[in-house]
Image 1 (cartoon, rainbow, N blue to C red):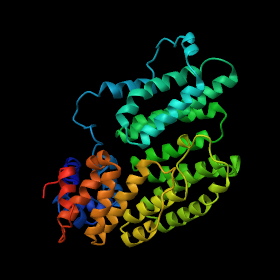
Image 2 (cartoon, rainbow, N blue to C red):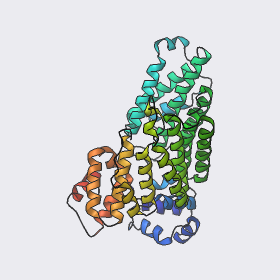
Image 3 (cartoon, helix red, strand yellow):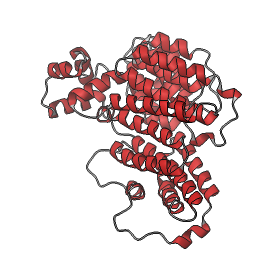
Image 4 (tube, helix red, strand yellow):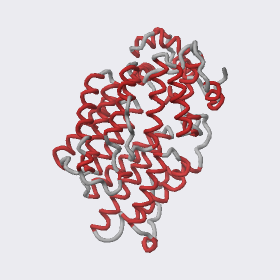
Length: 403
């Protein structure tokens, strides 16, 4: 796995910048840039990464590195990814689908398949999801084109959720432009569905794609505007409405924090956490897998993440203390939480706490941990420290770090 410092040095040379010039452009100290390039520092906080990416004129993903099995080596894209592209953006002048094909389809079954697709996504089973998603999109597109106006509207709703899921998968695969193409189509389908909550949910996904492209101002503005729309036009009297609103507020807060407005982000997160307390008193959402992830646990997880990213490890550990994750927190959020707690322990010099947390992470998500850039960086940092707790060597061997 390529070290972040090697990527930084390569991108800096391509931009024809000295370390001092990059530091001036990015607002990051030259000492941080130098330590990264010299491999004396194995990771950087997201605000630092956003600053460096801005100074280099590139996306944050170029610094973080490619997701597992998606190298930027110039090779032709896999048949799996080509099929996903074709499903999101059908070829021009392609013959329309056979209308009698819909006779063997069921809209409730399609909705269940899309919900199962979200489960695959949150479990990080991206290969399996990529295999089945093109068929879901094709079926949803067919439902949106035939039948009565009511039937077509329901089909548009399913098409919106399938395309939103494709957008999320494309982001995970490092294809943010493909993600935005899918999400723009998802937003159009959402507007055609008549469901007032669908479009704001998709806008939250678009804001995430903007964040990955370092368009933090665009992301914050979009999330705030969508949250206002939910509050004023649909209200927050249902669990679905409150969850969509809360997810958008969390997104806006994340963009604000990464832009340097940490106090304002904390204020927004605190407000969201207060509103999340109302969820247990509301009738539950029929299918929670297809609605924004928002509850007291998810807000606290995101607050821990922002505190870690802004070099406030004591605050992060205080927020994490005693947190009991609710049953509807997806596995992906649980793994991120453990990783952030391990990072916080590392930052305060508690190697034993970091190793205990990483061991819990390995039990919870072994495949995810092995390939995650930050997990590897934390273990590298622990090895360069003065204390080597029991279990560290096994963790290092597991992720491929050499002592």
